[in-house]
Image (cartoon, rainbow, N blue to C red):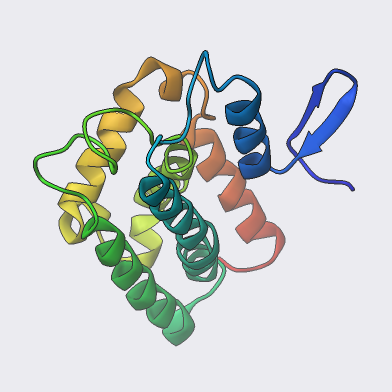
Length: 171
């Protein structure tokens, strides 16, 4: 289907990140668990992953791919989305779902936030200033070896974004 990533398990392909993660959870549910056991927490987790993938990622893309008024509108919407997401963080908990690390779906999205941190100069805002709790969460996620060793280097992703901007004449 020309989709990435693809997991090949027992000779059968499974594609799309969230579907792969659900598959892994189902296959090895007695050994490892990526989702919360609680159905409500699983549903809530799925909602926020979808929200990030659709709403926040789209705003971020529009922000780096535009200029002037369009960029300002995307920036305003992006910050509103991040503040809504930040509102889900409880000051007394380390991760979205509490002290246990169920953040499998959120953490890959921290790469987007890290790239946008480096892009703040072009959009003239600071995620750290606008959403400090959210950035603390990003740092906690990155401090986990399972996250930091798995995600691409945000500077390399940022360089790639700059190359795209040049290629499409957005600078």
